[in-house]
Image (cartoon, rainbow, N blue to C red; front, side, top):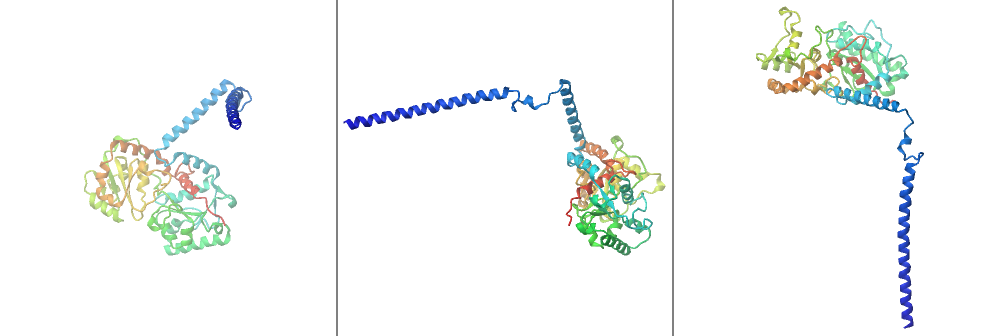
Length: 428
């Protein structure tokens, strides 16, 4: 019995101890919570506390603070306005703006000095006609900030050989290929720069079919270096991520730039030219006698009147641009200049500045098999959509204009921007 009483007393004592410990734990927790909240409040009110957000700002005059806020807001507004203005024609206006500024500040190109300027090197044949783009580039690169005389500062190396100039001197395509090969091989043996990248940081410029035919027999140049060409067709070895599409521009233009003249554009579509490709033959055969599409089998005879061909661009909504002997056509740049929405009718055509400009925002891009439904496709474009295409077309006109000296955002700067995007190569 005594043992039972002792056991009961021990149990009672243990339960009492457990209750006391639990009570002490609760009081301790409440105390910590109280002091924690109190300390946090004191810390936030302390003038040197990092949690006091007023301490993070420098002491300024209230007027200065207002000026800073106003300036920031104005800058933000300007950026927003620019983005709004550019967003209709560029894939990524912010990226383009930042990269373009970076290019202007840093891009350097070394021009090989070798070659007699009186033959096929260094200078173009002329700055007019369908090869004007090649000529302007040769001249612009020397007038620009991008040229460096120090090859160690260069991002890219320009091989200044003019296939067009060779053609003008009556050189055959076979001999042109030999001349190009001998010239490039002499540069490779004389300088160390080609071998550092196997030519990946070298480029050459040539417009239309002459350059393609002259260089295709020299695969070391075509496959390794950057080709800046007016014939950017996938079926003749054009590589979009490596090569650059050079816009073919017939300058000087015969008439001023068109645009913001929608009331004058009463004709649905226009094309006049030679049947020197399959798509042109089909276009003329299907639509030559149509009353809404102005389609002519041959270029308009000058005897009809002065600049009749060019004036047709002013009165037309959509100008048809089928590929000729090559996928490209100078009509594209003509259409853009005269404010006539271009209708691209070509397969395998990497349009100029295609990775920068959103062509669907200022042109109608079709495949060749769409020629049979051409009129209905154009008639299905709503008036509001046409107005938007036309307004955007005016915005891109500056990108398809060559100038001497070059002007910011013109065709030369756009080509240089394309080259800038391709400057990252591995050096050995």
